Length: 309
Image (cartoon, one colour):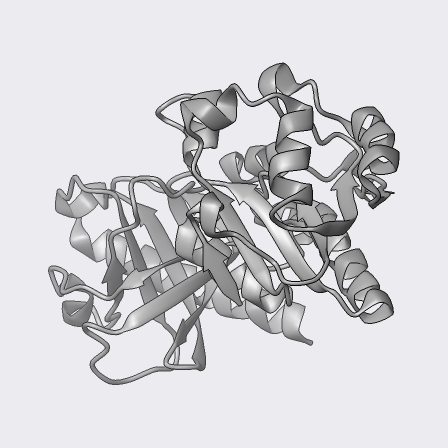
């Protein structure tokens, strides 16, 4: 898969099939676009292109405190899993922001990407003042000789699947709802760091990670989780927060792997969150914390065993 961040260098030989979007989370609704993209690829023997924008667009639209469902590298790997041939991640510059919708279609989609077919979601808008939409593309499809297809909205339990709905579910700790709408399990990833090693003293060793400041996190608390390290999956229980009982202040992701031994320091881990068990709280002593942590581990193991049966 080619991953291009310089739009001027995005050139396709022959014709292509293009989908466009912000793709925040690459959820089930987005995945419908890519399924159609791959079907059209087989039918037309064309390369497929996902045209998206850098996260600067999201920060510009929602504010500097915006947090990403998928960070850049996570989203890049997800694009690859979806089988797209080329991703064009367009910098959200003043020039792009002010570009007329038809100029964008002609200069980029037609002249550079040679789009034979453009596939969009029902609510997709583009161009200066969001004037580009399905109706404009339908008109331009005749002028510039490309096919246009629209994918209908996707619903989950009566709710339209969208990045906003998923963001709300994560913010409320409804991980089952978020994971259903995503079509995969929400995760936090990073390098395993050395912690205080308190867990070793209470027979519950943990791995510790510091999440990116741009990563969306669910409420502070305890979660049933599955962690992938070096291609091996470990059931576990994860605490997200500041560990008030032991006086830490930085937000961390601390996971006790239920059936694992060994030194994982320095390794890359992906912690997938399946179920919110309880909110983070401050205990009056380390002994009471230890008792609760063992209960948390038992509850996590029961939950994960139940959903795997």
